Every structure is written in C-alpha cells, then in structure tokens.
Image 1: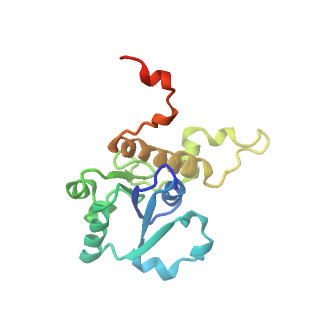
Image 2: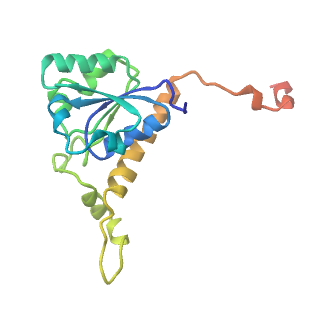
Length: 197
C-alpha cells in the first residue's frame, strides 16, 4: 500500500531514467506493467531477477513494430492512468502510439515522455547521456578536485536525479487532481468543525 495504490502505469521498456522512474512509482504503490520488446526478452545480458531497476512490476513482451503489437499496447493504455516512455523523438509516432492517438482513446491518461534533449529543437535527435547533461549544465564542474578534475558520478545526477525523479514526481500532481479530494475528518479538531463559516 502506498500513496499511488490503484494507479495503473504502462511503461515502455527503456534504459536508465525510465526504469528508475517506474521503480519509484511502483515503490509508492502504483501497479506498473512494463512492455518489453519481444526481440529483447531472451537477449538481456543481465539476469532480470538481479536487476533492481525492474523490481515491483509485471512485464509483458510485445512486438511493437507489428500492427497487432501496437493495437495490444493501445488496449493496455486504454486502462492506464500513466504512460511512461523514453524513446528517441519520433519513435512513438512511428509505432502509432503518439500522444494524440493515446489521448483519443483515454482522455485521462498522463503521458510522460523522457528524452535526452526534448522532442524538438536543435539537438533533439542527438543521443543524450548523463555525462553530457551534467557537463553542459555545469554540475560536473562541481564534482572532484582542482588537482584531479571532475569525477564522473555514474548516471546518478542527470539520469536518475534530474530525469527519473522529476518524471516520477511530475506524474503525481495530474493524477492527484483527477481524483475526488478526500479530507481526513478524524484529524480535524472538534472545535474547528463546529465553527460557523
């Protein structure tokens, strides 16, 4: 049980910040279904049961490049509250799963897109990596010593701290606004309840 209990999330398998974001949502109680690429199921170099980023959720393998696979993914999105994808710009569009199509079927879904440099702009199609983000923003300069220079901090600052954490927390307000507001009356003092308005 957690604050996101009852919230259904469809995660399109990716790397780094996407899985970390969905792990956080699952940790908070969301029911997360990960859609893995059918071609990658037996080719994962890591033993899935030891990959902590995949904890707390179910998964299904779907060939998204087939017409039937895309239809299946859309049906899963019909019942979801949140969709998370981390593909490069244009991939969801090529698969027939871009926001307009999903919104036409499920007007309440919160569609989360995580890309390195956004969906459009001068460097949108440039591959994005944690080290690039923190170098361009100046965060890398603050790590290390003057004598030895910066020390790359794995992918904890840009991908996880800057990408996944903000993606996870950014899904919460739209979901909470969709539900009926609930007030725990038992915690309001008696004198406050009795006051005239």
